[in-house]
Length: 233
Image (cartoon, rainbow, N blue to C red):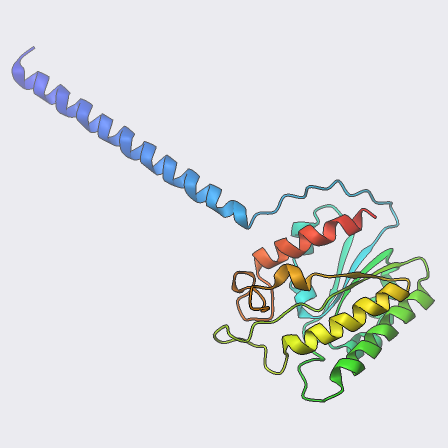
């Protein structure tokens, strides 16, 4: 074997070694990227038991409509009855289509943020009264249904291009306090999700939203982790 052949083989070995090193680095980078996505992935830690006649109804506005229930509650009998722009009066005027036709065994009610997008001085009281009517009508027409009243979620008016407008966390907190007190006395359960979503300044965390009002994937992960235990009750 002459010296030129040896040199060629050395070059070839160096080339293969370089290729292997590059491939190894690429694999490491891909693994790091995959692991970094785990923050927004959601693994259901509960084995929710349900009967054949169970229906878990999520009732509300766009925040509910945009909630990808099938993704977070895989194989569970969940129903999305959220409609963008809805106020409490919209639900009250359409209870048959929005609630009764599903004959739900559990209802998760999240409504009121669109009502609070108002300058009326008594809007908190009006919204609260309407939510009470929704709860009472469900109890009257579907007496075996368990009703969960979610706190209205916080907003963040600081985010650029936000859609918060006349909604304020002051009004949201006033309404939530009324809802909490009401559920303590009535046959419904209040779920405080407000505190799980706020930052140190009391606003909706920027990492949970794109527009200051609606939740993003990470925001829905947060509330799903809180809601799942109630499906097992």
